[in-house]
Length: 423
Image: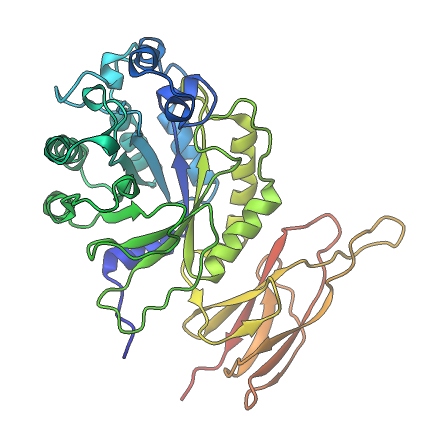
């Protein structure tokens, strides 16, 4: 058996490495998460009144795209419609429950796409497959004949996204887990997408209980919602599928005004490094404020991650996990041709004894099953050459990792390992 080659669109998606998830909609005005309507049992008639106060006055698509670019992110997934059924795009008379019919009076998806193109970011569209507003009912509870009519509405909505905004990076679906035994007519949906957006990545989130589960053959990437990516076993599969970890920065996908438990910049950097270590992308979420403003703390965390990406981008966006190579806990090695990249976590610091803390972690680190002849090892951030000892016959490699120079700490530091081409 063998591993299939990735399709060009899948290979390009893997190289994007780091993406921004944006959950924003009517629910953002309540500041209690994106599931507030369902979990707090707000009647549809009461909840839909939020449309009348949705101005989007703070939504700046260019600031959003520019922040993602500065964070080292290569794509943004925007919730064009979430489970509450409200759309940020012009639904073209499919209904009036959308941003153009709110006080916002604008097609916010059109603004988003234009800004992404300006800043070199690939626009992706999140779209729910369930709906808590359609015909004032929960689609999860519809009888089969009504569910079939709903799917016609859903597919017509997705067709608008595929035909009204030019080429897009992909579509990110979520909700099939609500009716696991039903026919979602995925052949028809994905066939339509391929007709209008042949290069779009297709994702359909399998949910919290099905991390990394393979779905329909047309799917291009599996998801790990709120989980940790795992190396995918692609042996003997008909298609090469990518992996993507999607995580929140706090504990809600949408705005949570009293959720104060946020990731730190160090945690985001470590999470991105470990996702790349298992060959997965990281899709990191923010929950914009009521009318679309980017929360300042979340923005600053993203910018700190961007500093790390600029220092070590050579190792982040292209290389893949080195087959069979084993490192100590927390470290890993990626490969690109004859170049390898050692990701060192928990590294100590250098400096005067009277001021320096955290010296642990400086010293030799072992790499097993590394059978490539090494010619040099150096830190990517400052070019410092590192000592190493190797026995290619046994696969043993030991790298002496010097500490962070006083005044710096990148959380995870990357060394480039240059090797001789094999004859």
